[in-house]
Image (cartoon, rainbow, N blue to C red; front, side, top):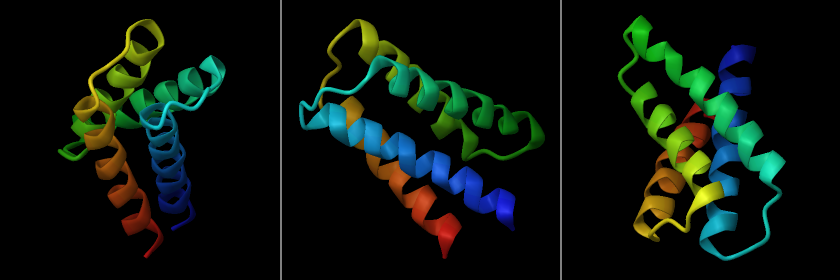
Length: 92
């Protein structure tokens, strides 16, 4: 039960990173790398059969790409909403 809340917290922290990028706020690159790394590690649950973990893998890739290039807005909003929904659902 506690692990589910920790994993949901990772989703919420990453959703906040995406929303900060969307609204043009200055986000520390270390925060983006931290959230992206945790999402990528969390996304490895796809090998255990959890199909929703593909959202984590693609979100991690988008976070890493946002350090290099400016992503289109749809590539920032979509993962933000999906991660926010996953994070809130894990706390309910």
